[in-house]
Each structure stands twice: as C-alpha cells, then as structure tokens.
Length: 137
Ligand SMILES: [Zn+2]
Ligand SMILES: [Zn+2]
Image 1 (cartoon, rainbow, N blue to C red):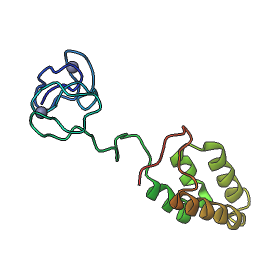
Image 2: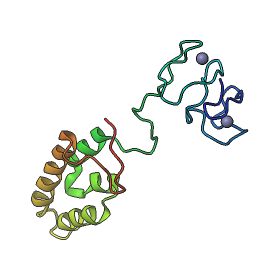
Image 3: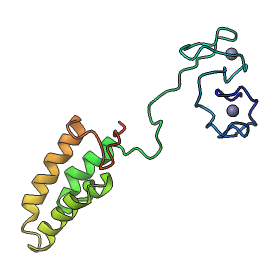
C-alpha cells in the first residue's frame, strides 16, 4: 500500500500517510498498489493495472442514511425523530410539540407531516441533512 499523494510506502492498516498527512485513499499522484507515478486523471495504473478510482458510496462515514431517515419519518414522524436524525432540530421540535402539547391528538397532524416527509426522503425529494450533506442510500 502506497500513499496516493506522495508515493511513500504505508504501514499495513495505516489510515493516514505519516509523510504527508493525507488520508490513504486521497491524492492522485501515485498508484496505491505498486507506488508508480500515475496521471492525476488516470482511472487505471498503467504499470500494474490496479483501479485508481475509489468507490464513492458511503465515502463519508458521517453521512446519514436515506432509508433510516425515511423509515423514521414514516413510523416515528409524529415525534420528529427523522428530523432530529437529520439535524433539522426546529422542525423536529415543532412535530414533537404538536404531538405532546395536545396529549397525542395532534399526532394526526405531525404524524401525517412526518409520513409525507418520510416518503419525500425515500423518493429523494429531501436529499440532504441539515448541514447540506447528501444522504446515502
Ligand atoms: Zn503521503
Ligand atoms: Zn500500480
């Protein structure tokens, strides 16, 4: 395993290059398998044939799951759980307040609201969390 940024050989299991401080999958200058120099736009190492493109799915470990958020909205939307999950705290508190302050009677309103939002999340109409980060599948 070689650093893609500076070509330094990495210790097995290392997450960050100790020479340049770049995370192991970042950088475009060297092949991670054989350490040969690669063109920044190359998708394959011309020396060893290794793939140089990193899968982008779940690249961000902090990205929220669309499925989880959608299901939370559909089943627990009246408590605003899906909005708490996505960081939309004001909306979440509004849904929670509607439910609690009416001793549950308002859960019809907040429940339908949450249900619609849950479906919108699953359909991709709400595709980002409160920080503007894209949701994963
Ligand atoms: Zn490096
Ligand atoms: Zn290579």
